[in-house]
Image (tube, rainbow, N blue to C red):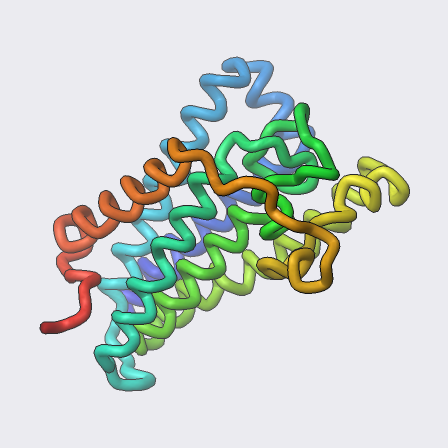
Length: 230
């Protein structure tokens, strides 16, 4: 039970560390106390530390096998993760008033960039990451961990749409979101969006470096190679 207790405690701290600062009144007080940039740096460091604890606690939880491991699961993860890293690289700091993680200004709804691929690219990246990791770790603790992340990512897309529609107003939100969709390439499939250029080389390089960094750190931090056997 000790292993499950640590996992439950880590999960509770993870949820509270994201839910409490997200409340506008709490965030305003924290920002006024230390400044916007220091707050973002401290919050990012704390979030990474709590996430690392949660992942480690899942590894120490009692092992309850739900399905056996197969090599194709690792192959799938290694095919999907570069796409997730590219989404993160293209979305970080890009103009996107419809989601989080992007700049508020400079967004052109006629040329939405990464927002044309998916309205919430960072949440889509989390969903892809958590989905393939849930599949590749067929035990109860990791299914609870990664399955929850996947569910939160999907729910977050819906909640962000609702919140942004309320803040911006239905007419403005509809104008800004006209060439985007929740699901990847949905706007491309139904003809509302056509890419006019490839991702910038710098963002492609950043996505590649992120993926290679995760590959290198995975066995060092977690003790397990993410590469398929053989």
